[in-house]
Image (cartoon, rainbow, N blue to C red; front, side, top):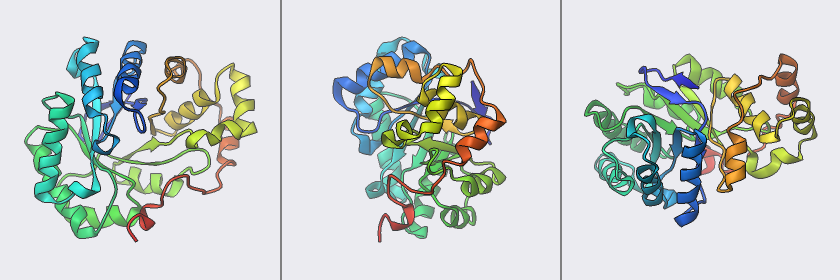
Length: 270
């Protein structure tokens, strides 16, 4: 299942997150995910696993054009020249000729965001990346960037889970043609403590993860649950044979408390 980005590129609705996974562990996780049917792999320079992710993709035997690969430029590489250098270094580590999606990992100053975006736009126009976007950007960061952007960001990857549902941000972004991608959809395990999610999961004979991922997809949000356990990687993908009711969606809405498990982008560099 895919959602079509604002430039016409199809992006798989569910992907494998690889944060905090490295070495042979992440290599095996990516291989399992691709065997199960995942076609979207999410990585980043700062995850220090691009080499293993690239090797797993290559060894899978699956045609490159069938796999959607996302990576990100880290804050210390932001700026016009540094961004281009970091991008090509990521390509080299991944053993790829192009990326499907490249994101600014965290916002910094408006000026640095703009310089970084200019470099990313040029990489996009050169055909080195099929889509470009943002990560952890709040509305005011996006508003400033759009003052100078010639390419509208395709996506914004943010912390999003039943405890932090990001409805105002999604409404703003969708109004601009920008999809949200959920990182930390399981809230670092906190979703397993939510009794309402357990009740809904039992109703469908599904796991809590299935319910959370399905909830995101029905909200038109890309979901990238993270796991290195083969059984969980397989289970997390079993979301295409059921749908949540409006009553279920409303019940999950009530779980929102606005509490973050990671840093607020506005406080990241203060």
